[in-house]
Image (tube, rainbow, N blue to C red; front, side, top):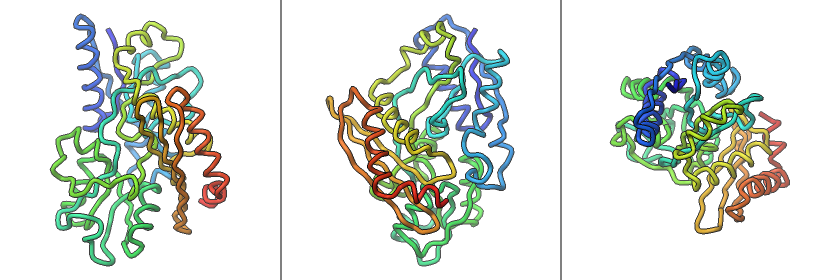
Length: 302
């Protein structure tokens, strides 16, 4: 029996079911159970994450469940996984990445450029907000919390003229037709790990870590590792505007990094190449270049 800790939101359940199906593919005899949990991030819906402790609010209860022996692994969106895990935990596998980009969703407009001056756009991500402001400083950015279904309902209820969500979440839940515009990396650099699923496990559970090996997608793991190394060097969390996107081709790895400040509207971007066999080194190099260009001042000014 293998028990998967998961949040109860539709997207989290989809992700856990997907991992369950992949494990069943490789281990047909394995019995797998979903252990559904409610996290602090699911309970507090009226305050931006940047003000209440960041995205680790979505995984702490799942980790406690593993510590207490109620679950063996936890499935997360890698963009929700802090760069530093609690002692005793590791990411045992990262699966093949879905579309990593942000999505422009609107019922009346086909792109960001189509929005009239003063349009209301929903997002609670500082990373998205600072890049939105760089594209369209005339827009009114409003907080938007809740799961994917809730956010879409708020748009449909007329609370916003448009909202920005992750393409991957919409695609996984069957809402791809709601995407009016895929924002490219120049328009909105994704969050670290966006679009990738990760499996968290206790570091000493060598048998389960071995069990997860067939799920590892090495290309995604290397690319996300570079992004997370950059984030770790910058000590980035949900309370700062940081974006990263790595791509690999053959033995070459490319990493784009971004740091911004919502108050000043300033954005610093870096684009570097490195060796695929050393993703951590490239991540640290991009972080150091961002810092040399003034990133620390932007981050400490939040």
